[in-house]
Image 1 (cartoon, rainbow, N blue to C red):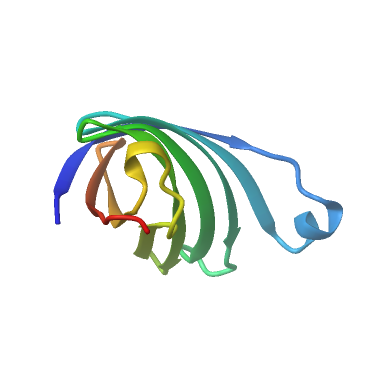
Image 2: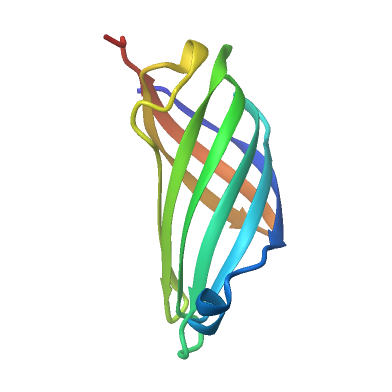
Length: 133
């Protein structure tokens, strides 16, 4: 499986929630990303999050549509995020939503790891592109 790494920029903006959702403690955010490197792409997404009463504990889910060039192949795909933090210890899973690849990225599957260092965001993406029926 190919594995690529690079950096990305992200802009996170708060969104309005329904009264019921806001009262439950949920937060809603829009995501705008720009990936650099072998994944040369932009992405738009939505995230729901909640913070626990215990400091350092939280959870989030998100979907983002990524469009651009992956190792010379043009197309788009969706990433699905599921993350939590338990008293400061993070856990994150980001994977390609099955069968969402378009163009030259049809048949794409894989997972993406995110690292934040000194306020900068980095990704490591392991993927494969299978023949589609």
